[in-house]
Image (cartoon, rainbow, N blue to C red; front, side, top):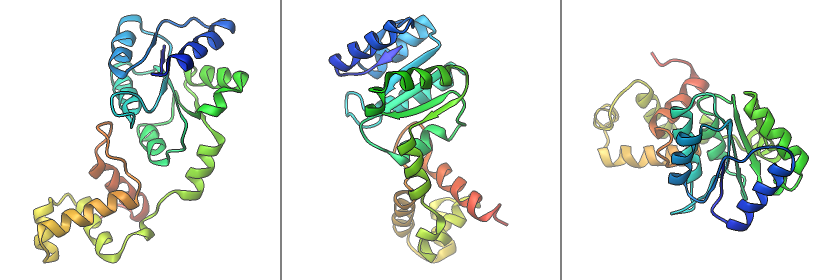
Length: 213
């Protein structure tokens, strides 16, 4: 199954894959059509652009998250023109099995592209080398937070609401909301319906600090 809004790219992918003996069940141009087509045809894998209509931001990513929920075991290979480390974190949050993320330029290496597709169908992971390099080099840490932001995150990890955090820290709820928004930005947690930003921030905290007392 292929999902790509640019018709030329979409048809090019169909040609590349069929020339190598793969069957393309359908080729669609938007996330809604992708979800419907996968439900109907139950393919082994989906190849989809991360940025698709209507906003060209993260529709492909959100569709991938929904497909993983509906069809466990479905191989998903996403691609983008850009290295989006926050998208990579989100994509891998539920585990790397059956997931791939390539830059569009990498698709031009047809043999590597097809190998990556077979790898995700087999339950493996296929990450673009440039994405891996960026993840290792630029992964945000709790050290990027100010003491006040760190304290806010610690209270979040303890399960406190914003109003309870405000009372505990002796600041306004609006100030807590500002701290929280900054935490999301510094930890590169994207605004997407695929995951809950507050939960992702707490996971960062638990990984870096251990379970709060």
